[in-house]
Length: 301
Picture 1 (cartoon, one colour):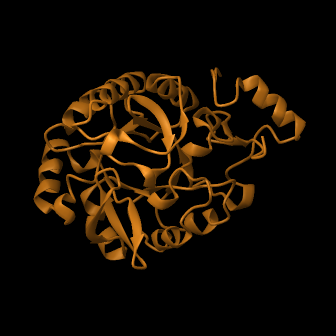
Picture 2 (cartoon, rainbow, N blue to C red):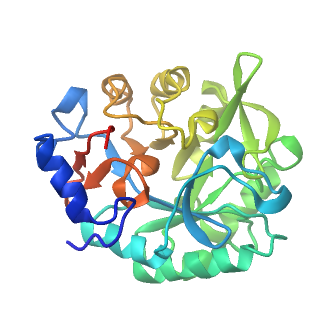
């Protein structure tokens, strides 16, 4: 498999470092520290200011199109889509991280369309999704559209918007993004690229209410997103205690967290985004093949 140019000058350098610390070539997600075969990694392609990036989620702001950036790739979105397709990594998300009125929105869209062409049916797409434009992205090759702001407009759940979206594309093509931030000891769903708190608390009641309205959930622990300092364990525990629709958690995985064994005991399969930790996006994990396993590079490198 061809990896191209990553955050280290080349894969060869990374491989030499791996050998120097004698790390194993493959680490099984089934047996290493409680990883379960029910849990799978999903890749991501976050596009900000026209480039594939890994950012600190809580730093994103529309004013000046600013974000604290961990890694900005010189490679385009199509390259990463091809990488994921060759490795058989399905269900990853492509996210447009600029507002529709930003001068970067069209460059983001072009990047997204190139990724969808490279991996038709293998990627989900989010960012500015409405009932009016969702079909365009599905026709371009997205398996699902990811939506938050349209359904939680003006800080409240908009049932009519969700029904309109379901009529437009079908619930089987909808991922509800319930990404959240903590305030006053509770988690609230956030919109507008995670800048705006809604009045909707993320709890088992809202999960139960929405479970039949979509194919799956995507939930970022926003305050942990991009920091690689550990997941939001309280949030993960809340989600793991609910036995319902399949979901993907993103935000803060560092090394191989022990919480995965408890999360994997949930009734539906759990998926994990770990984009900021992958070598190809500036981190320390290396994809090693279609078995969805990863190599771990030393964090000291």
